Length: 458
Image 1: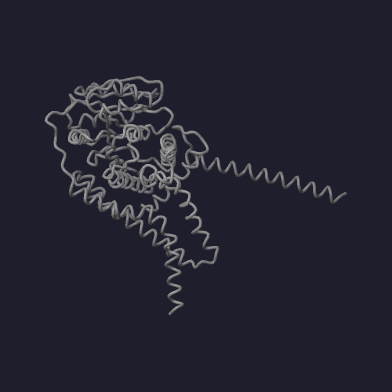
Image 2: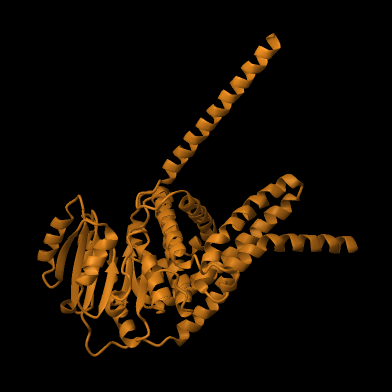
């Protein structure tokens, strides 16, 4: 009996030691977030339409947007917000294609829309700043040119602003386009894109939704965001020293102006799904490197142990970046246990338990998200019917973790830029480096061999 209890205790301690990191960092917050979102869902007040809708400016950055611009502007035209209250500014950053021709065609197709074309030769950030200075109306909205607005999105954003004077900036919900996902020819890529769709749902309708309730959103999404004009013009505007200008603006609103950032959970913007692993790799690398840069700009003096509990940004950065290294060690150490005579069933069992816990947190997200899609029955049906993606998400998120971890390493080694290496290029670079290293070792070995032979001859 004593031996049995000792073995049971050994197993419990083993599993707790290896499950404690992901349990504390991800699974427990997911469970807590589930109950907070349930409470929010049933206690939230419905936004009341204003007596008169104010004028707004919609800014759309353009760079080689020939293939997507028409659909983007068409979605604005189909919006239920009064057309005479929308001023559209398209800011072109040296496009090399027929984007301007498409714009001219859209002027003829959508004569009700007030559209202005601006040329910029100083990069995206300065182009956005120029458009902000020329903006009109009470609110400024940003959308990317490679996506489409849900017809009610602009109205819902403005209603949320009008009913809540304390809200100064918001991000909308960004999802990948379900129609484009289902039109994918190859099943592996289609499945991969479905996982990405679930990832976006979890990120916005669960993650940022939960963070918005606690006033702890780390970054606005530049693909669909909105500001009170009086607020955005008081910031230092968009920064040219980082590729994450949206994160930089978020930090300005929070750290410099002491204003809150919110999510409008019922305003949707649909973007193109990922083309493949290479695009996913470059995209997440760019996001990760940009976030690291901006965090260093604003938080370098705040990164103190005493600020961990008082400043959610320090806490978020610690969990998201600093703890990435213990997580990496944790993963490799678990594999190494197989070479230290630990029973295989203990190692495999801990992995199964861990994966099951991630699936539980994913299931909680799933039910939260379904409840928040009630006002969008078509998207809700699409999401609900693909419940089988939930068990795949821990593996997908594990893969994305390593991409983001590579971004942390690359942020240390090089400056950021819109052009980053793809996964294929990284593999080729690694292969080339290893070949050079092996050649160097071979040359050293040959020199030593010759020296030894010469001495033996003497």
